[in-house]
Image 1 (cartoon, rainbow, N blue to C red):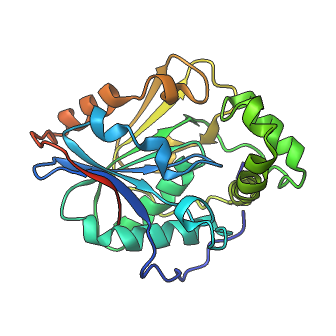
Image 2: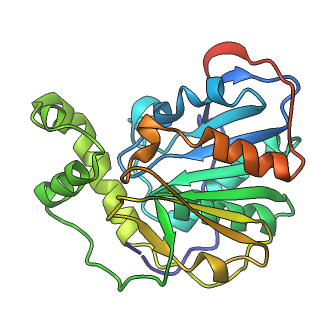
Length: 266
């Protein structure tokens, strides 16, 4: 699923709630920035702060859903990423580790590129629901709701009962369709190369992975890890130990004690 050449300017990030943060960790070793899948929202990562007490977890709030339901949907993936990178500047006092799942993987990639271009280092990039493989041929952007719904159902991204609910479809389908267009319309440039290590995480039963030539997208190391499960393996078994091991190997461990702040927006 890959859209036109990226625009060079970014949008206005002022006053927009780009992140959800459910706890502050005074002695955190790093900040983990989580990028949801297509049709997903920041709440997908709500429980991750409990599983990773050494990290301060930020989940990205895409426009057009949840608390940002009144805003226009993003139409340009690199521009969206540059806006996220701009909003992350105030959080760069700790090492930034990016975790993107499915559509979140290329958004995390472009965010990492934008951060590094601005002089902000990225400690590690985790590309989940992806695979180190050649880019597939560009697919036609989906224009039929039912096609996108069936794809989402086949991946386990939602249930038939929820998709049969008229109110759910009315609220959710517009941004599910918008995300599908955003993802399918993205045309990944080969440059600039990242300088951070990348870990690619793939479910062993996942037939719907994002595919990118990760080994050619960074000058640092790339690890491919296969875990049990399908495309949404992380709903049943979040890869907390995998993240902890990778960050510990990089010397980023902490003893912080999370302090709940009831879903603070940042």
